[in-house]
Image (cartoon, rainbow, N blue to C red; front, side, top):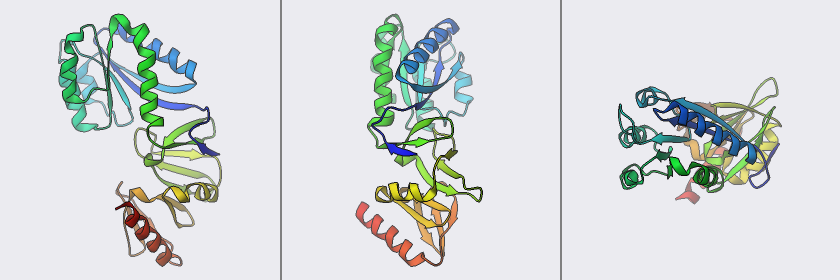
Length: 250
């Protein structure tokens, strides 16, 4: 059902590729697919030949952008500056034929640079570093879904919801789908996550306290804007646990 991050499993990564050369996009796409297949990673890849189109697209579910620097409409550095203002955690990998552009990437906190003529040598280490950044550097666990097992960082988990149909739905932040069905019972998730900052606020909700803004008048307000009902019977105990947790975080 739910395991620690170290076991071998399927890891989900969402990429966007932007280059005005469609032939190179195909080469890059195939190379990423091949490496992810070798590593047993599930990936989703979107193509953009126009930086204008990329900037107009909602990239909230994207974790990594591979971005050409030398494009006719608008250069990749300027594109990255605009992306960074909207998506602060986005990993930006510049793909270029000219190493001279590398120093300019510091202003947008570029994750990596790849030279097009050295793609075969440089892409695999880059993808491995991306996986480490997304799933190892931050504590994550494996969630069993009906058709696959995926890594999800604890910080991305907002709350688990038990439904009348005995399904457990995990509500998350981007880059994951906002609602994901999980295999298992809510009580099982509670037992495994209580010591990781999760609080059962009522029969149907197990909430990551890192996403709780406040608990007042039997309502838990989350940083997502959602408001969840808190158990009246256990209200004082729940408030005490949340207050104690907040005090330990200071």
